[in-house]
Length: 151
Image (cartoon, rainbow, N blue to C red; front, side, top):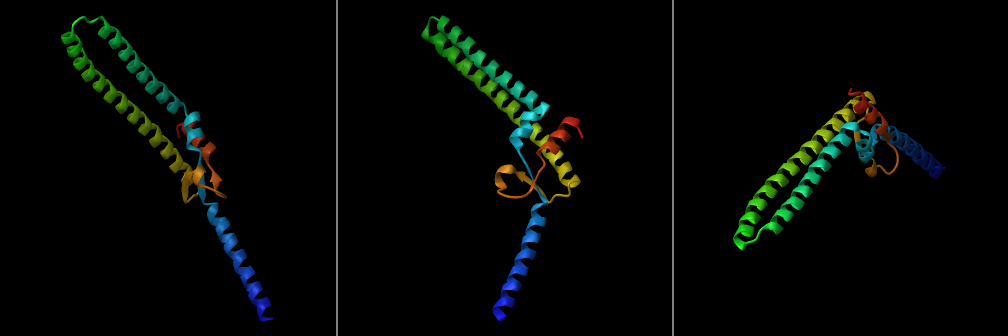
């Protein structure tokens, strides 16, 4: 009789804990950040701008290589290398600044949209989908919709 009461009490506790756990997991949203970036027009534009700058950098190097081959004396080549090195460093810094600026802008916009969805859906948190094993609510489409609508 004692064992039966103990088993029933444990089953009751298990049911309560299971329902609390399920209710809590419903308050966590998750996002497929890569998919959001792929479907966000501003992110695609930023990628094109960064890629264009990278191509400019590559073309710069091709042009400088042609100019270098046309030089005839070691002194001219050394001076050319020094000047080209300084120019290349400046262009690489400019490229890195542009890339960082665009990444930060896209991230901030996605984060702002995610915060709006968090409030609207009454969620406790939104995490990356790769950290969710079971449960949670996929809010990826809602965030994409927010980003597209500009709200």
